[in-house]
Length: 354
Image (tube, helix red, strand yellow):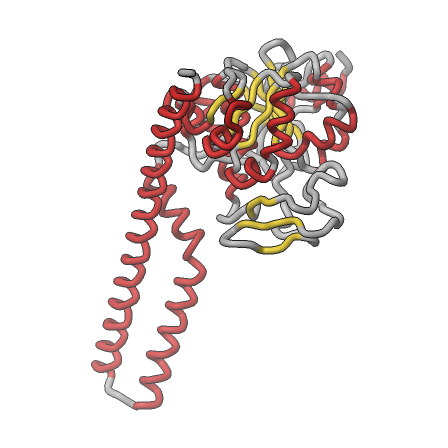
């Protein structure tokens, strides 16, 4: 050990850790993955995702596992995912129920795990919101891996890139080839690919990683970030080269992990993030309107106070109704997810009953 590396250990206060048979690498598709030699990770468990198979074919390499939990992306790449299953080089696939059903006989293998069905029996996968990256880490933990390293998880998306066309809701479609800053190789997306806006809610992916890190900490699983420039700052950072070699002392994360018990407070924070700016603007405009009315009409002070109180009451009632609607929709989404899981379990029983 050199003097500098010894000082690193002292400064972090953490022991060295290194890759072993209990290690799984979750391969995000951000630009930073371009600096990683994927074949060098072959001795360990790797989880690749989404459309990265285009690059794997270029270098004749496959990860041990494949995940795609995006309802739109999975269906958009159905034929290529079917080809990955049929070629037999990937041990296991984590796919959504709609894709498993669409794949038909191709998915009638124990190598295909129905994500929606597995959420009922594997508590780690029941975390919300489901994203392919964060749930790949949770999947790795549910398979028994004790060290997880995320690579290429940059979390610095350009939401709508050149060459993409808006569709229904939050869906996008690539209609022409163009430079895409979101991915680690040119050609990750191609005309005809359909996908969702990366962050339909503010910091969707970063918040998913925060919850994932907190959940894994509860279960005693170590998780590290191999990209020091990543927007995910809640994980300890490791140097990949050192981690694969003699070991590395993890660097302390920049953010504290959330308390997963504060579900109600979390809902309130999500509500403020979604509607806070609009509500603040509405409150300001309402105040300006009352002040302008009082100045122009030259009414008495008691009448001004009554009008202000009435306006405040109306605003408060509107805000309360908006929050109730938000909470009810959140509850309905959770119930829908639970029903989807139950339907998926029934479908899985049918899938393997033949």
